[in-house]
Image 1: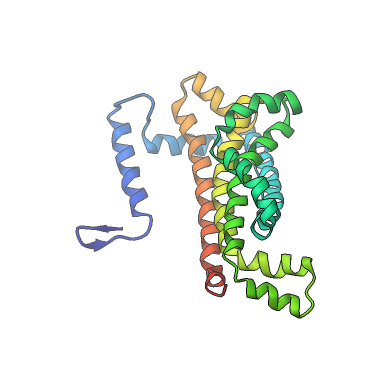
Image 2: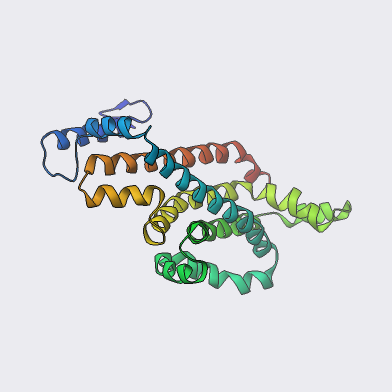
Length: 250
């Protein structure tokens, strides 16, 4: 980031926005936005409490289960769509529909089919994440030079060898990009699931704090979610940069 011709250190924009947030909170323009310093004080008070730790555990469990299924199903399906024209034509319209559809509208259906527990929340999280993973994986496979596969076949590679050693690694930059976006969408999915299906985890804390107008508590939990999503996104982005050379070798 540059300001008046000077190169500012990384994360400077966050510091600037944090300062503006603190100023708005201190002048008390609205009760909805307390001062950032007050939010951090509240966070330090609640982060070690049993309700917060329980909520973090429940949200983390649903998130990691949902993203696990999204990755383990989405990547193979995306590879199959990229390498097989018939499968691609059959599945692509549905993938595009679910990617663009308001998935929140499906939550009542999931509640009827799978109940009000963890299973429905995990499925909701998976549905939010999986479609972009499939599309990005498919796009990566489409970019692979067919000569790589032909060469592997000439050396006696089996279909599973080509699947694991060529398609996956050659499409890895796009796969990681899809996983990164999918994980961010999964954060939204798990909170929506916990708010609409079963009031547990961070969803329960949001419901409690908003109903009692405890805005510093509300923002404290929200900042934890922002930090989780940002950390995951930056970690996967660093992996993308490390494997970007695969794209040039295709």
